[in-house]
Image (cartoon, rainbow, N blue to C red; front, side, top):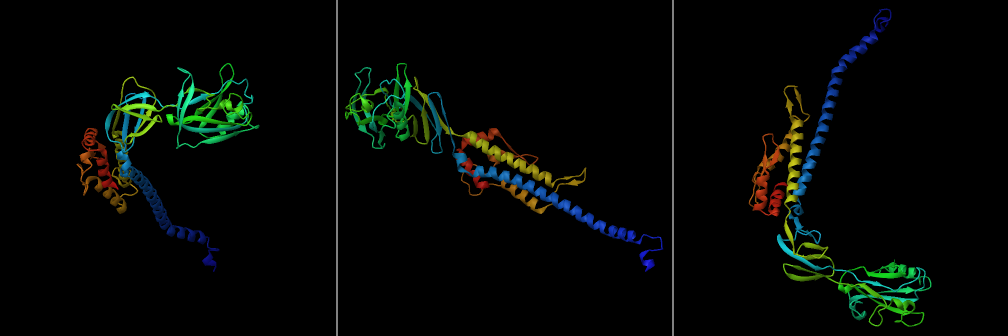
Length: 398
């Protein structure tokens, strides 16, 4: 027992045993640590590869989206007078557009009041909308001659009582009703006037105001609430701006619009009338080549990024005797092979004028990356409608 424990022998038996065990365990631990490091490196590498593939897939999804290739570009030779936009339904073409008159909303002004707190009167105001024939003060005399109700716009009745019978209170009550008329108070230097405006443009959005005056019972005189009457029986307000439709022409065809936003007068085209024109402006609708170029360039950039990442992860540097984290990995080689095969192969069953990316001007370089021959690509776009190019790309990648 003494010899076994080393007592009296002068030997550190326990230390020797510990060292022998450590020496036996060392290579195994080293192999496990190395394997752990290798697997960690490969896991990180797969994450990097997955990120590159995800970016490539996003660019492919853009190519697979028909809207990318159905976009239209629209321009106006006179952007100050005519704004234009187009959607996928628009046909390419050029149009001569003239604007003779802009649509506008009607405005009415009351007589003058000494202060914001002057009492206007009490009763009910009934607002209706339609087409009015109003003779303006110039050439005059001012008169409300006729009114035809617009059945598409609802009328509104507003109660004016002791809680809101002042000039300021009437203004707030009209605005709170949200009935299609906005009210404001203007100081014209001689007093305060109530200014009423239709919230919609167009001749059919003129305002008629019927009054039920609970003060003196007279609904047409210029006392009490009836001083706001504006109808064929009493025009106690002044028309400062007449309601009118926009008047314009396209290729000589005369047109009108209740709004200055003329949508689908030309199929798929929206015109914004902003000013009258002295001479016709040219509105041009064409295929949006810039959108297609952006989508294709995004795809090429994403593929090249993927190719560079894949190359770095699978490369072997003979000078440093170092291999990429995925060098020799079967799954990685399979992914790279499938992606490149999709690039170099012909599209099956496609009835368009192009069957390979090379015919579109997208070619593979010596280093495996893609490049766009802008000349050939532009010629391909001119030869075939953009939607045909989109169909080719979708056939290959979707």
